[in-house]
Amino acid sequence: MAHVSSNDVQRLFLQAILSRGILSYAHAQALREKCVASVLAADDSLDIEYQDGRPAWEAFVTNINQALDCLDLDFRQLSDEQTGREMYGLVNRKGDEIAQMATDYTPAEITFFKAIVEQIMLSPRHAYSISSLAALREVSHFKSNMTKTQAEIVLGSFVARGWLVKSARGRYSLSTRTLLELGPYLKSTYPDEHLECNICFEMITRGVACYTPNCQTRIHYHCFQRHRRRSSKCPSCSADWPQEQGKPLHAVGEDAVKEGQEEGRQVRRRDTEEAESGDDEQLEEPTYMEDDEQTPSQSQGTQRRPGGGSMSMDGAEDEAGPSTQTQRRASRRSGRH
Image (cartoon, rainbow, N blue to C red; front, side, top):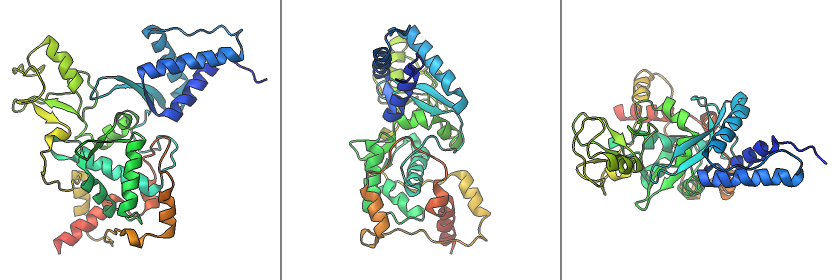
């Protein structure tokens, strides 16, 4: 019989987290209780017991993070932007593009995901969302054999696995899982677009903004409700705020986009400046395959259930073909002629 120790509680808990991705505080507590019960079932002589309550949970999280420290990982908390519910997941502390964790998404699918995330982050008026058409259009901006039908399947997997949220309007936005697990990447890659709530200081992609000119206050919906119970004024400029979210407050998120409003493709300023100095490069036009042009290997790859594990944001472009940035240069170059 294998040796069992109290440390196995942490090991079982981490294994469960890796298989689930992100989970609520209540779910995490129930999971911890089951891990303790499983270890005691294997050896009831161990001096461990499940303790309920916030202090015991915080001590457990501290121990988990001490064990993860050598891996540059954190077991971290983030509030759901809509409900304010406390959520937890594993986060890579590094803000670079080193792989977050293992993934079975293909390089082309990861590049597709990164392109969608970029358009969401760069969306005008702080809409932090893009239409289904705009999302599918991203396939044509990097070299890939992915067809429209395959792209739709991959998009569906991003939603099913909790990386993106699709609204009733058919718009894609970042999920709580993406904000939590890829938070360092988003902050380092899009510093100008990375906005924080003035109440909880977490990243905001859904909420309300003050209507006063030059006031930069933006807060989550759940933070608005909590603040409004204490005060009827903006926490920054002291302008009068309504009892409920809505006019004259401005929307942050997809409500900032009106129905039928035109959406152009967004390009980061840095990429535009690099494109200006890269005109002497040999460039290729973006390619986009119709469904009847797909290669057998690509078709077979899409029929498997795409994705799994955590999302890797590194190494996708080298294997998928020229980067999105290179294709932007091509589009810009062709537009000059």
